[in-house]
Image (tube, rainbow, N blue to C red; front, side, top):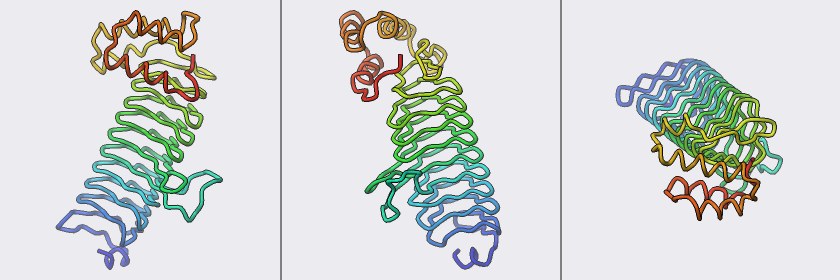
Length: 274
């Protein structure tokens, strides 16, 4: 395979059906799975591993210690695994980026690896990152998340499963977005976004339970009603968060989803947006 790549040929191997456009540059040490397609003028560097049936569009760059799962799509101009935009980053450090299966990276998305010794950025499965979205160093993105156009995550941000970041929204470093939360476009997120919430603003504030998201996720009507009561206690009772949690634990039936909300709030280090 290395010889054919250096000759600038399209590769179509019978054993694993890899297809590489003649203008692409692929390091012979890069590991490509079955059915990988690499488009015109894209660059794949030596420490990259790409899983089966991934599609790399034109003018993409995939670099660094980057491991990509199966069935991912990278559209024009995506830059994946380039060194982090962090002044503390040391070029001698081995830092990593791990991406799961069935993810879509639209045009000009940028994703950085971690920083520090063995620092790692991790992206799960079935996520959609729309055009110009940015994921900084040491972020953790779960499964089924959406980042709309030009959404931006600073370093060490966590998105729990099914979180949605609106277009042109910026998320401060070390902030967490809880499961099934949604943040409206053009928001400024400087504190943790609680699970199951709908937030918006500059800075972002909680407006309501994410009713549409919870129904789509097939939450029971009983759980949704409980969350509605809990949000009223948390954000409209005038109680501090610690006192509100105590009241919730006394008055509300605690199922696993509600326990997750309680644990999320108790473990917050940046505070919960209100």
